[in-house]
Image 1 (cartoon, rainbow, N blue to C red):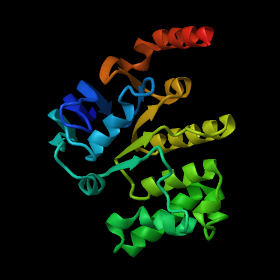
Image 2 (cartoon, one colour):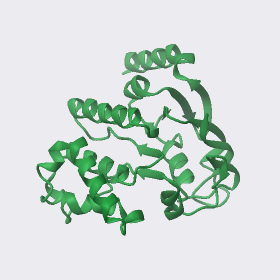
Image 3 (cartoon, rainbow, N blue to C red):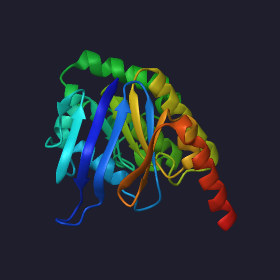
Image 4 (tube, one colour):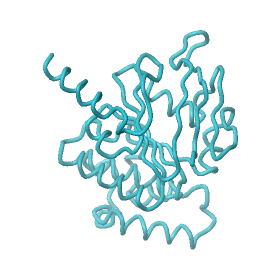
Length: 240
């Protein structure tokens, strides 16, 4: 069942200069969908357009059957869509605890729910629980990434969109982050992930789309073109 669909979307940051050109893709409920491609392919622009930072010049975006291409980011959040930016979406002068509380702003008046979610997040990320009073600015890159994920899932999103979860992290931390994403998906959250780490995206995703110069070149169940991707990686490594 489709949770999110993008239908023939064209969008860009400057009028008459399109970054995305007639992009169509689908995110199935309960699955992890990966978008891969080189720098400048338009991967991050897809997420920004879905979340309402950009509005399509043409095309439709549907979430659970409802058109959302004209919605604003706060409306997306209220509908159950969370978006973790490539940059750390945390406030360095605030504590871990206060950063997580910011993730609950859509239901901040429901103290019982806020307390329940805080307990659940700390159970999910025990390392954050041990340092909850510490300012986020003192955390390592890996812990900051965990905190960013924790803040975005505080609201119990139906759809979690993540931009480059592995950027700037050491390989052992990258593996830990991806393991966390798999656990989040197993708990029922649908995930749309943008990544340059093709092998990791291939490892965790159920469906994949390859973007090039703002266009979808290939997409569907990862098994349909897994061999093509591995060959592409092999050629790339041999050229280095």
